[in-house]
Image 1 (cartoon, helix red, strand yellow):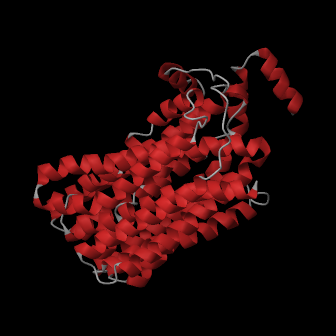
Image 2 (cartoon, one colour; image 1 turned 120 degrees about the vertical axis):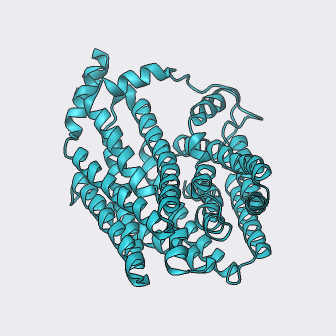
Length: 435
């Protein structure tokens, strides 16, 4: 099983690698060097989250329609190929956008759309495969291996990009993105070799189909679920909404080069990984709610330091804020993932996890687009680009404070009681027996 876990990790790594150049390098080049609207850059980078609802359709289709006896692998490879194509052509689209806006918009929608569709095709397929190959008892370990490999790969990709872009120019940027794309494709192919067993036919169990209306009623009918949904939305908009703005802010506030801003992701990733590991080790000693509170408060302080660093012109204060942001993100990830898994029950596990997935995608989309729009609006009105970024970070800190207020009202035990109350009698009895 170790070999399979490592191969699944390689698939996760391959897709994540294609994300790094776009979210940590190209966004900086487009906003700072090419003077393209941050709102537009955020919207293009957010296409994967806009397309995220298609994951349910892709997963359902692949359940019932194996290709050459394989349910997941064809969709993983198709998705990875689209991701690689998207990342390889993205720099050329960026330069086209700066020269010919409308032609660039069309090309950008195709390139970033291909990458976004590829991300969704691949992600739902390799996560489904991971669940099938691991079994119920091995899923946590498999996810831990995949997640750790992904973070390490993000750090390594970021460092490699910074070296390849030591002397920034369009040709170097194209070559760096091509190198990352080819490396991702190679690792993905290595991960897919003989990983999925062939199936004789479409014999997967048919899962209950749920309409959007029934999902919405289940969400609104459980007050604890509603609170947790909005809590996640506020938290993730705040924590992840800075994805496309942190590197351009470093360039604008401190005059950092492309090489230097690309390293910001490696700093964030390293502290994120350390915090993730520490959070996992403390899980049985410190309550999940306490970890979630510490993560949110750390995020508030990190944004304050990032803003203060820009106002003072202090690079050290800025980097301290980036380090603390990585720690906050790691703690928030561990604690809220654990809370999410606790807040599932019986036959509604898939339903509630699907809701949390929608909250994650929607918050990333809203965070990126609204962050870009606020930055552009404030900059336009004040003529101060650094001030535009600062306003976004202050708003994100306020959203974290709002999420803390909601967190005080969340009770996992009450959630499970309300969820179990809506289950059939036989299933409630089974759950009572398990307790």
